[in-house]
Amino acid sequence: MRSSVIIFPGSNCDRDMDVALKKYGFKNHMIWHNDITLPKCDLVVLPGGFSYGDYLRCGSIAGKSKIIQSVIDFAKSGGLVLGICNGFQILTETGLLPGVLQQNKYLNFICRNVHVKVNDKKNKYFKDISKDILELHIAHNEGNYFCSEEELKVIEDNNQIALTYCNSDGSNNNDSNPNGALKNIAGIFNKEKNVLGMMPHPERMIDKYLSGEDGSVFFENLIRNSK
Amino acid sequence: MKIKIIVTLKSGVLDPQGKAIQQTLTGMGFNDVKEVRQGKYFDIETNESDEAKAKKNVDEMCKKLLANLVIEDYKIL
Image 1 (cartoon, rainbow over the protein chains, first blue to last red):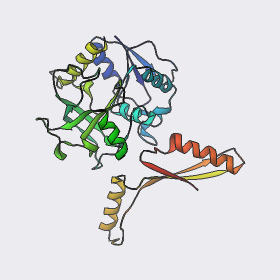
Image 2: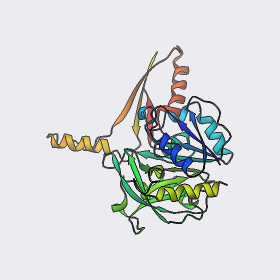
Image 3: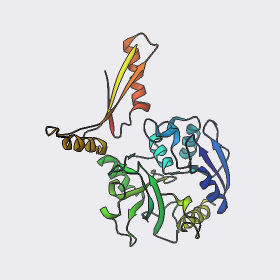
Image 4: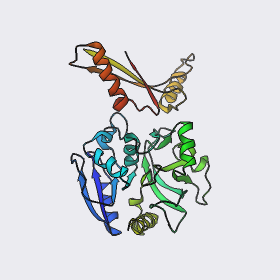
């Protein structure tokens, strides 16, 4: 399985993602944002970080960078596109995913582990995943998911909510919502479910001695389903 | 020609920074402050001399980049 990680000026989770993808068997290439074409691959990842210094709005400038049209074309042809954190913000700015990530409700940068519930398994990212609740890491200032009521209805009707912030027992409430996100949303699919944006960082949870291993569960499942 | 643009959050969209500013102003003794909404201001200098054409171009810039129409409105002054 081949993957491409796009590097924007200000990306800072690109190498962690490279390490994670390679660990679980992807043959990964790093792609510079000024490139125009993508190499042949099965998965494109937009990594976390602060692309273009978060100028204007998080992800807005990266959403107009040279490589983006190729990423959009790849997504429209059914290719898997995964955006983590700033990558999620970029995907909403390109219009590949609905809604927007606003500033966290209490104006603080949040950096800690959270639990998220897998809400839909009829897709290549979570099909047959061995855990329904994952402990993952978040680190963001703009993760407060928002969309209009009409859009929310469409998202819910199509089962596009991928992940929701929850307590360790899987219950969703205000206590388990770190940033004020609408409906505790931590991750969203496009309608076809080949594009996934998520605030938590699975690439930071792939080592039992350093962090935790629920990121490993995510990547092992992803490569199995990508074949 | 210079064109000014103001981008604001749509009504009903949560503005935590505006809320924090409002609370600070109230704490400073400005008791008449009812609500604060924070926005962005752009000055765009263009080579286009035809005002109608320039504003049409700026309108497209707002739609494509300067404002996120999911949560923001824009006004060309």
